[in-house]
Image (cartoon, rainbow, N blue to C red; front, side, top):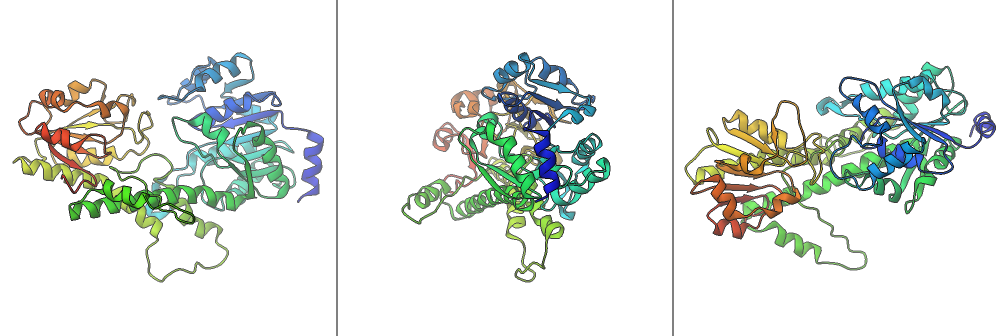
Amino acid sequence: MSDKLQKIIEERGPIKKIGVLGMGYVGIPAAALFADVDKFEKVLGFQRNSASSGYKIDMINAGESPLKGEEPGLEDLLRKVTGSNKFECTPDFSRIAEMDAVTLAIQTPFENPTDLIPDFGALIEGIRNVGRYLTPGTLVVLESTITPGTTNGMAKEILEEESGLIAGEDFALAHAPERVMVGRLLRNIQEHDRIVGGIDNTSTERAIELYSPVLTKGKIIPMTSTAAEVTKTAENTFRDLQIAAANQLALYCESMGINFYDVRAGIDSLKGEGITRAILYPGAGVGGHCLTKDTYHLERGIEIAGKTPLDYPENADSIYVLARKVNDFMPNHMFKLTEDALASVGKSVKGSKIAMLGWAFINDSDDARNPPSEPLYDLLIEAGAEVRIHDPHVLDYPNVTIEKDLNAVVDGADVIAILTGHSDYFKLNPADIKTTMGKDKPVIIDGRNVVDPTKFIDSGFVYRGIGRGDVN
């Protein structure tokens, strides 16, 4: 612990003004919740006034959420905190100098996972902006999911270089990763336990002061910054591993001609003290910003934060990377199911009309970051199919046309492929859909266990579903 930093913080007093960099799925709800805390006086959301995202500034300041999809309570809270002048969005990064604490919630994708080099460009720009206007005693917190070793490495170095100050002596530095899902952002921030890891005890304690007032049910779990980084990347990696296990079991069940969901129910039935048999559900693939890349952050952490050589079976693949490959494979399996189903009615993918239902990676949301629908779409187009896409929530996506009229998308289609479990798709009526398709032997490929196979088969459909070896 630095006595110097502790003294500076004591002289500065309690956290009153907070800056949040990154007005997206994490930054907007976090900033609004900070602003709703009585002990905090002012929250500034920092947003570049760029051609692609500058529109957010006026929307937020008008109390409107630029996030699409259902986010219970968010717009009401935004109206409240902007109306009371406690929250404001600004493109003026020089105002970071006014802040007692600054958080960064900026995406950290991998452009090419094979080389384990993340695209930290946007995060580095954000860190440099903070460093340029950093004042003694300020707390800086990285909320972005990052490679283990980044907070006490790259981030610390950039902040010191830009500010001329020393982390742990002149300013506090910590990692407190976000743990949210779209559709429940406010609730997740308030109710999930908060991992807080400073580069030293003083930094950890200052970060605890920042996050504690926001929590309703969640508690603070303090640790080192590197442990916090590993916690975040590992929890997403483990979920990806669980999904991959379900996907692989579903492929086994298809091959053996049995129903995955019967097997899952049997596994899940064994309960009792000391027994854990949790098994997730298979599907058309894994999308989103987190699960598709956090495995690679964890893997790279060995290179960045490793203190001793890794002791691991020689020449053995990482089970985490293998899980990623299984989940990345699922759109290819959807293509194979489509190909096989069409072949059973004397058709090929080439020249067939495919209606893809769902572009978002998660149900009842507009979140279309890294959707598994995209690689399937590319495979179908490459094979010569005519593809139309329906999604009730996604407004647009680069280089594809997404339609809102379900009947128009399904009209004349040879195949319906369900990629997302949107509520609307559970209501599909097989007789009505068959009439709209206008085919004697229409095909339906269910990638999310949305429809009842028996009802569709009885209505004359050729059915294929992930894990449904009993009826495929």
